[in-house]
Amino acid sequence: MSLKGMLLSSLELSEEFDTFLAYWDALPRERHPFLPSKQHITPARFGGVIQNIGIAERIGDLDMRVLFYGSGIERVSGIKVTGQNYYDLLPQEFVKPLSIFHAYVFEIPCGAYVGDIVTTSSGAQYLYETIQYPMVNEDGEVKYLLVYGLGRKPYGEESDRVSATIGRANIKEMHYIDMGAGAPSAHIENFKFYR
Image (cartoon, rainbow, N blue to C red; front, side, top):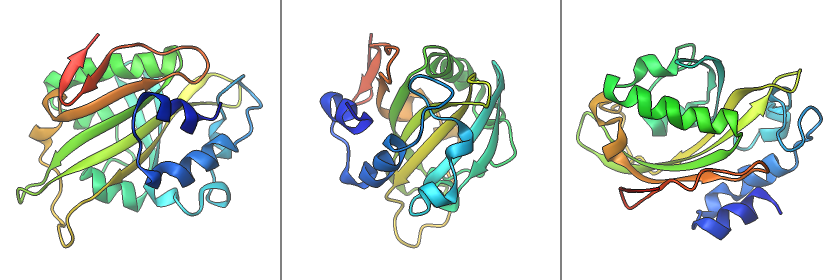
């Protein structure tokens, strides 16, 4: 079953994700039974959606370096992260919960869907949705995270996200995605956490 089929069986996903999911499903899985390698994420394969893709490398438990963050995902996420350790950008109280989230994604491995309410410095609010998938390096080790993000930032809104609004209270939806090795059942629906 395609990842779109797996996603739709557990949550309603906007058709805006269809193109990305088709590109993802078409990637070769040469170094891992069900995950592609980072080397296959190229403008030639993802040209129509590359601006909405981010790629990070997991160096250690609290060190995830953002290698690339397209202009579209940067705009709707409201944060500029390329070249930085993602955990350094988070409020301290959100570092541990997010590191646990990433541990599941990398170690099971599994994917995730997250719907996050963004609040900008001018007070605008909108839903920022991401699909997050692990990828492997040339040796087949799960080392990379691909994030595909969409949002409806209000027209003309140019201010960035208020960092204090990054955290558990702003996560409207979160579901892990079984990509072949299982996935945790813990999830968030309408801001409420379920185990």
